[in-house]
Length: 132
Image (cartoon, rainbow, N blue to C red; front, side, top):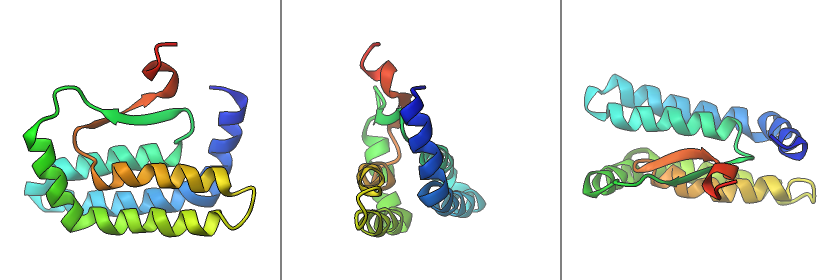
């Protein structure tokens, strides 16, 4: 990990990451309590891990994800995805007020996509995605 990514991740964790991860963990726990929604709970825990330490990692589409993931994502949007995406949007607006917060606001906006469509995605290192 590059030093700048480490610094960004530490500041992110203090300002945003911890609180957003709590939201994803709560959503995951609710999904795991309801037996039928365990796949969404697992996806929510995966995203909580990503939200804690996002710089240097990316969410990419998983090869082979098909119609099941798409249908699952539609259900997710209705049940939990919209309020998690709203949390990212509100946090990014608050962070964009300061110049120092702009990179974190941008990272929050990039997290909206995975908060709406968690199934059929995987978290990879940014370097691995580009083949470095």
